[in-house]
Amino acid sequence: GQFGNIIISGDGHVDDLSKPQRPRFELTAQGPDTDTLTSMLGINDLGTGDFVLKARGGEVSDRYEAELNGEIGGVSVNIALAADQLSSLDEIDLDLAADGPNLGAFMGLFGVHGWPEEPFSLNGKAQRIGGTLDIPDLNLIVGTSKVRLDALLTNFPDLDASRARLFASGNDISKVRQMLGIKGVVTGPFELRGRLDVSPEQIESVLIEVDTSFGHLTLSGTLGSISGLSGSALQLHMEGNSAHEIMSVFDIHVLPELPFILDAGVQVTDNGIILDKGMLLMDREERLDLHGFLSFDPGGIGSDIEVSTRGQDLSSVLHRLFDKTAIPAEPFDVSTRLRLVTEGILLENTRAEIAGANLAGDGLL
Image 1 (tube, rainbow, N blue to C red):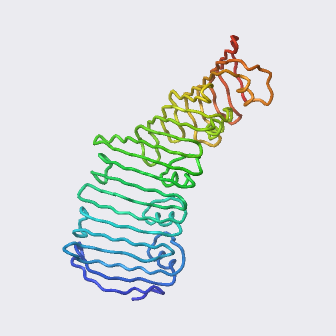
Image 2 (cartoon, helix red, strand yellow):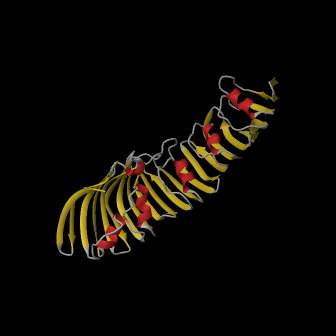
Image 3 (cartoon, rainbow, N blue to C red):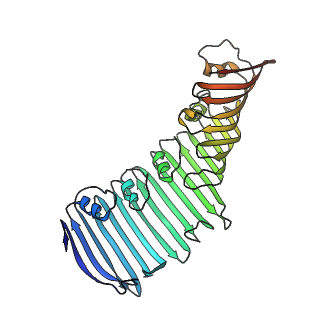
């Protein structure tokens, strides 16, 4: 048959119109304009140019097998399915391979939105037997980033009593953050290793290790919401070469460009991070203790942190806040409440001990 400039040919046999079990078919659809096909099917724009899709299904060695392969809008797709029968997919083997110019458009076909609009290549296998879904090796390349997933869900579609292993690397971590739906500002080269284990009691424990230009990061603990991490309770450990670079993420520019170690309890909310007993040690001499809220809002507005710091050279600290200072290089111990407001940095309940002298005050920087 022909619909406009789309040519459809093939033959088949449906064993039960109301509930097909093992239908037999061979179909081919082709045409010069991908836009015409996607508009007719009511799906997302997959690009332009000609297309050809071939589908086949039938019994093979007492099992039902079906295939779909072809190219549409620059996206090449090869899908192979094997099952006992189509009416019940409790036992199924699936092989998938796809590549194309726009991952975001491709994932939109499955109702998944917000993924990078980058060239991609995807291949993997999945097997379902009853309530067990095994994804032994799923590989995705997005631009210059690579992602590999190995997962076993023993009570599919629920996550309880499941496990997953994730490895990713590439030149831009923001692409992977976008796919995982995780907020953040870290960009550039990265390597990520993740592990998720879900107990029968549905406690989701996670271990994530990341190496980026910021340094090395380890997160461990329990997850609240996998999609966005809100509600998670985690322990954070981080090491890097520049404490200044880390805190500049929150528009705080008062720390030195020195090697650092950061340890903190972390609770993630929809709009920020709650730090519990955070400790930042810089160059193994200057120490900063943090407790409070770091906001995701632009400029860190809304952040509210209890801060205490001590070290051996107060003059170097003040040089980060003021261009000139006459304070000598004396040992110090300072505590304050630091709030980021639209007008600047508000200091409250400030106390300081410098070279045996005690000082108190508040102010706006």
